[in-house]
Length: 351
Image (cartoon, rainbow, N blue to C red; front, side, top):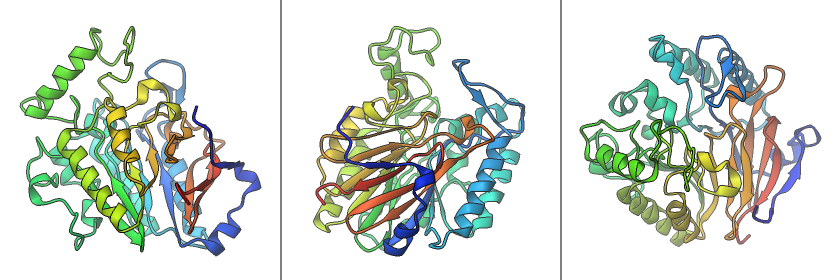
C-alpha cells in the first residue's frame, strides 16, 4: 500500500468542533445503502450478512445527524447502489426508491447521486435519466465546461454517459463520473456500447458465470463492474485541464474504485489504470471517492491523490453506522467518520 499522508484519528476521539470553526464548507458522504424490504441475507460470496431493512434506519440516523450539525452540510454525495437488486424479483424497485428518497428529502439540501451496478439492475439508463436519481440538473449551468447535449446523458440513452461537475465554493470543484459507461448491465443489448463492452468482457473472462473472478489474471473483469469509455475520458481530461488553469481543487467521484491499494481487486473499474493515469496527470485533483467495496479502503497514491472507498451501509450491523462528513479547509480535508467510517486528516496534494 502506498505511504499514507493522512493523519488517522478515531471517530470517538475527534468530534469535529475545530473543523467546523475553520472550514470553508462541509458535505456528507454515504455509500451502498442497497435498501430492500426483505429479510437479512448473505452477500454474493456467502461470507457477509446484509441488513436490507435496517439500511433505511441507518440512512435515517445519518440524515438526523447531518441536520443537527453546527455547520450545515452544503450537499450530500450518495455514491451509488441506493436500493438493492433484490427489489427486481419482488417488483418493488419504484416503491423502495420512493421510500429511500423520501428520507433524503427531509434534509432539504441537495443530494448528488452516483449510479452503481444496482441502479442498473433496477432501472434502464433511460429510466434513471428521467428519475430523481439524475442529479445532473445541479451542475454548473454557466460553466463553459458543461457537456453539450450530444454527450450529456440526456439525448441518447443508449450511447451517452452520466457525468457532470459543480463548484460549491470558489476554487473547489466536484466531478461526478459514470463508472458503467462501459458495461453490459448498464447498456441496452442493441447499443454499440453494449457490444463493445461484451466483447471486452468475454476477452478477459472465460467463466460461464461472468460475475465470477475465478482464475482471472485481472479479477476486475466481472459483469458487476464496468469502465469508462474514450469519450468520457476525453471529457474528464478537458474538465481537469481547465481546473488546472483555474487553480481549483477537484474531488472526483465514481462508484467503482480505481486504485488497487484502496479496495479489493475484484471491485476495481475495468480500465482503472487508464482512469488513474488521467487523474494523476492533473495537479488539481486532490481526491477520488468511491463505494462498491463494502469493506471500504484508503490509500494516497504516488502523486498525492487520496483514494477513499467508503464502507457500505448495507453490510453495517444495526448497532453501528457508516457515513461521514467532510470539512474542506485551505490546506486539507478533514473527514469526520461515523461508526465503521474512519476519521482522517487529509492534506491536499502539493499543499
